Image: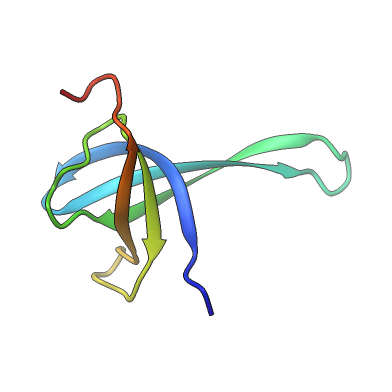
Length: 84
């Protein structure tokens, strides 16, 4: 079974080796058929602490690393405006 991948924006990097990634997606409302935005937050492992707030990143599902962390940082797609 392939591992799930998500692309999202880093909203927090204040924890050691952990980032919080906000993933937005559009889903169709079952009754109204209107497309609405849904957001999910994921805690991801950032081994080298290279991702900063505002970066667009790709994360992949992994084994549980802590109580809340089940994702790993794969790559930084685009640096955010607040990053240096």
